Length: 511
Image: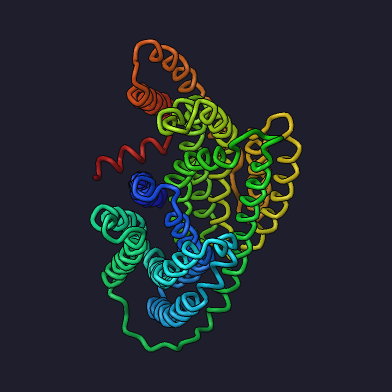
C-alpha cells in the first residue's frame, strides 16, 4: 500500500510543481501588463473575495470532511451507499454554491467596502472592483463544485484530475492575458479565471464519469451530512487560526522601527519559496494518504494505519529536511537570482534571505503537521489539531514579540518555526495515544535523514564557494548548485538504503 501512496504523492507533487511554475509565469505577466495600477489592485481585491470563501468550501475543506466519510463506504465495499451519498452531496452543493454565488454578486458593493474601504475615496477604482467582483464571484460556484467532485473521485483513489486542475487554471489565465489583455485590459484576467474554473470542473467531471457512477435514487438531505458537518466545522476553525497567524505576522512585520524597512514584502517573498517544497511534497502526501488512512480506520486495520503513518512521516522528513538545508545554505543565492532586479535591492535580498533561512528551520515540522492533521481527520477526531493549533497560535505570537527585538524580521520567522516544532510535538504525542506508533523507528529515520542532509550540506557549502569563483552568471551557478545538492543527497541516501529512494526509482521505471 505504501508504494501506492508514494506514487499518488508523486503524481500530485509533479502536477503541483508544474502549477507553481506556471503560477510564477502568470504573476510575471500580470506584473508586465498591469503592474501595481488601480486596475491590478481592483482585481486583487475582487479575486480575494471568492478565495476567502474557498478556505471554507474549497478542496482542502471538502477533502477533510467528505473523503473520510466516503472512504468508509469504499473500504467496506458499500458501493450503492457510496453513490447515494455522493449524488446527494452534488445536489446539495449545486443549490448551496449557486445561491452563494448569486448573493455574493448582488452584495458586491458592500463586500468591496468591507475588504477595501480605502477604495471608496477613488470612485473609478471602486466601481471597477465592483464590476470585477460580479464577474469573478461565480468562480466560488465553480471551485466549490470542483472540490466536491474531486472529493468523490479522490475517495475512489483517483488523483490525476485533482492534481492537474490548478495547472489548467493557470494555463487559461496565461492564454487569456496573452491573447486579449491588450484589447480588454483587466477584464481579460477575470475572463481567464472563469474559463479556468470551468475547465477545472469539466476535468473532475470526466474523471467522475470514468468511475461509472451508479444511477441511484437519493434524498436532498442525507443522514451522513451530520458526520460531514462535524468534520467541516473544525476545518473552518483551523482555517481561521491559520488566517489569524498570518495577520499577526503581517502586523508585526509592519513595525518598521523595530524589524526594519520592507518587512512585509520580505515575509511574502520568503513564504513563496518555503511553500514550494511544502506544497509539492507535504500537501501532496497529506492529500494522497487521506483515503488510504480513512479506509484503514473503517476496516479496523490499525496495524496498517500505524505502518503507513510511520512511513508517511519518514517520507516527508526524507524530502523536507534536505529542502530545509538547501533553502538555508542557498537562501541568498535563490533570492538574488530570482528577485534582485530593478527596485529589489541587495538590502531586499538580505532581509528576505534571512527570513527564508529561519522559516526553513521549521520546514519539516510544517510538513509533519500536515500529515498528522490528515491522520486525525481520517480518525474523525478533528478537534484535537484545532485545540493544539490554538495553543501554538499564542506561543507564536508571544515568541514573535520577544524575538523581533534582537533578531528583527528573522525573529518573527524563528518564532513561527519554534511554534511549528511545538505544534508537531503535541500532535505526535496525541496521535501516539490513538495509534500504536513506533516512535523509535521514526526518530532513527529522522537522525539518518538529518545526517544524510548534513553531508549534502557540507558538500554544498564547499561547492558554493568553489563555483562562486569560476561561474559568473547567477542563474547558471544556482542551477549547478541545485543539481549538486540533488545528486549528492540521492547518493548518500542510497548508501543508507532509504525505502523512499527505492520507491521513487521503481516509480520512474514504471513510467
